[in-house]
Image (cartoon, rainbow, N blue to C red; front, side, top):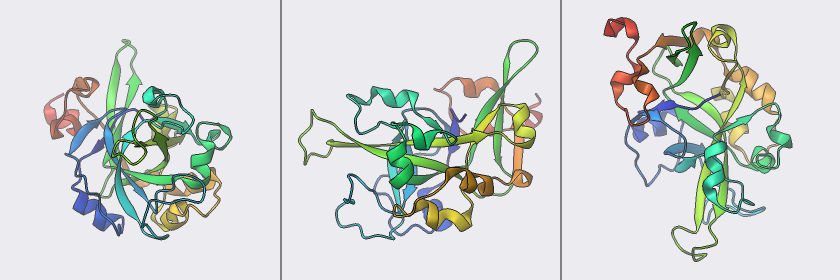
Length: 246
């Protein structure tokens, strides 16, 4: 699964790394402990709302950086509280689930992350957190889905009429990561970004995710249990225990 991650890069760096045409008007602060329901960056080619409609004035092929709430809220939901339970979507079944199948077909995105956290149970019953991240300075291009939810309590043309939300697709953990947890976030290889983001392309999820993960480029560091507290933040959370004297 993916329940916490790091998103600390400056948006200008994301614009350059992901070849973004249209930056976000909203700038988020660096976050070393991204938790469900927080505001996060997503990358989409164009934001598809209803069938046949796109965000006003946005032509096809424009890659955009936008801010969404982590925890997908399906368009049919009565209220947005369901999103806190839908931060992840299993890649094996997402295309069949009513909550995710429309997004799989036409509303795929990338969710950039510096890395993510996972917890491994110990013999003592405590869980050791690990920070899992690329060895270089590149981002993880996590495979994501997004949805729009219409707030019926707001005027249709109001700023708060539509809520943009997202979810991370997960897949079976590979290699050394399988010894920590049986699931991991799916990632999309750079060569597949165009096809993944194109809402006009029908995709099979598993081949994309199989090409996206490069185990040899991933580093796994044990980190302080301070990350367990969602109120904790800052670069100290990703310092390996060895450098902290742990």
